[in-house]
Length: 266
Image (cartoon, rainbow, N blue to C red; front, side, top):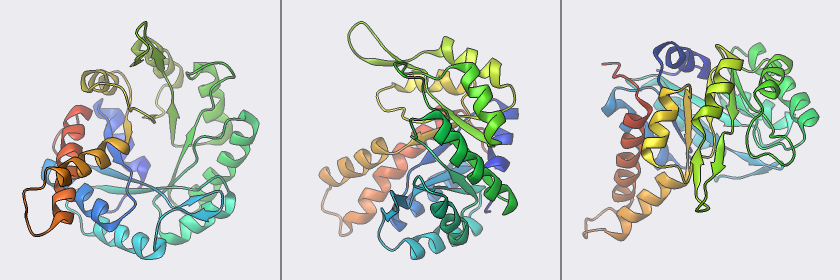
């Protein structure tokens, strides 16, 4: 069934779990993602980035949008279509017309500009009966979200969900998730669902703990496509390499769904 981002994340917030949000850019990825969610009996959020700086970033976007809606409407689990507006209000309008059930704006480094566009996007989304997701810009020189900045951002924009940063660099130069800082953000924001955007580099146990500690949406992109390519490289000569790639994508996504801690809806 096709639902809004808010519909899915309010359940995640109440249940203390997270929902996997795979980045999709082809019909093969869409079907692999929804099929994995159906097999696991879990809700799924399809993150799609149709535009970047006013230019289309996927091939045949209209056809892909129609396919996503059709696949979501006929799915056995809740499916949300979360479209990144590509940094422009015109992109937000096009995403609504394409059939998004949520609009998203990320990676705007200047706080005032991010607030202005995110607020307009959120107002448009709510007028259309759908949801909105924003991302709190990090303060200059900081690689993590200031909890009070997050509170102010949500208040000024009216978003239904907000992406936050709480990664840190260890002594060996590796990245880890600072769960103590996440706890501060969670306490400050109260009932607003939180997104982990950019989890690459964190191990599975760190992600699992983050989902237990207040994250409600986990964005996933490169790791799923890497799994798809690895499946093709290990291809055993089956007649359809596309289905092999889809299976690799889906199997890794199912592992993420387990990490997120969502209970089967079956």
